[in-house]
Amino acid sequence: MNIEIIRSFSELQALAGEWNKLLDNSASDVPFLRHEYMSAWWQTLGGGEWPQGELHVVVGRDETGSPLGIAPLFFTSNCDGLPGFMFLGSIEISDYLDFIAPAETLPGFLDGLCASLAQEPNWQVLDLYNFLEGSASLAVLEQEAAKRGWRLEREALQHCPYIELPGDFEKYLAEQVEKKQRHEIRRKMRRAETAEAPVRWYIVDKAELLEQEMEGFLQLMASDPEKERFLTPAMRAQMKASVQAGFQAGWVQLAFLEVNGEKAAGYLNFDYKNHIYVYNSGLNFAFRELSPGWVLLGYLLQWANDNKRRYFDFMRGDEEYKYRFGAIDRRVVRVKILR
Image 1 (tube, rainbow, N blue to C red):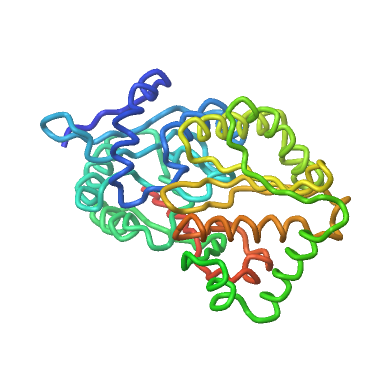
Image 2 (cartoon, rainbow, N blue to C red):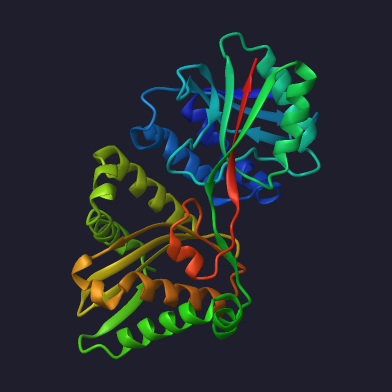
């Protein structure tokens, strides 16, 4: 395997076509691994999450030059102050991360990656966050670390509840939601539909409206004091860049519930390969009596079933409402390799 190391943004940009084509066939294929998302993340280092970093994307190629795998890495000091390599996208705003390689080439690629990293002098840790617990990469990393005498530590992180959809909203409610919660969802949706003030929901579908609609969404997010603190100028720029890139590529779903023409709730999701990923949400607390978040979530689940999406993924966080909507649990994992 020939190893190529990408160290500049211009080189990273030149990889776009090969990157996404390889991702289409990768053992792990999630929107956070898309080239346009990773590029947007790198330009602000995660909205300022990392004060500094050096790009170190490792590409493995066969003898014809075709890519066999990509390790989207950068060099920085990790949360423990150790110099090392981490995934682009780490840690807070990218729920799922992994290597980019088809299942059949993943073991060989990770062997080549680790051989390449062994030649790099200045790192102490390979600190990789947010693998889904079923990732094929985990067992291979354990083998590669053991082979080189590196110490591997594995830590279960946040819960990531998700719903497998049957393709029929009423069947979903009847079979996957407990009776009491099923009644609550239906009651709240009916109450919104019969409210005195007109209620409507919609998904943004016009590129020329996206900037304005994102401003509205960020205002809803900022209604929550904790989210307002999160939304620094750099983080706002990061979110806008990621959403713009994802919208142009066709996998961003930005939805709102309006009451009397005023935004009452919003959801920012990724609609990627028949899989809805719930990325963030915002509420206008002036309309809390109408439960706008629950109502909009109900409409989005109905839409996802009607449009034959297979999964509705709440991603990181174990908030109770996710389980009330019938989600089942899994977790993301951190792997730390020290040499």
